[in-house]
Image (cartoon, rainbow, N blue to C red; front, side):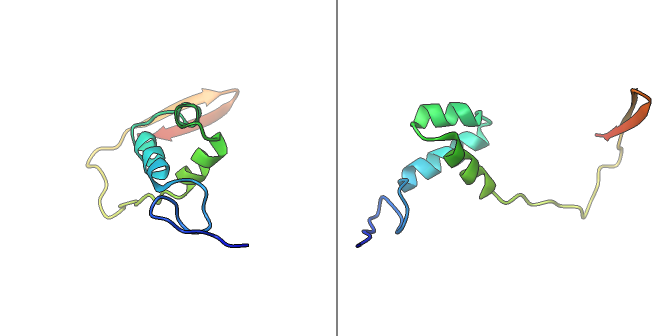
Length: 83
């Protein structure tokens, strides 16, 4: 079996590079995964796989000067949510 590689599709892949770029763009625009899948005629699993490829940087070197906390009791359990 031979596998072709073109400028449109990476070797051993089936989804064109332009579609991968469009998925990333729509994820950044905060479009829902099901909407992205429907608009690009791909599966939601494909969108989810692309989302999982994202790497998020966390910068803990500085924190905000003021932090607030919401404290709420739900069914006898105190829940704290930081903002």
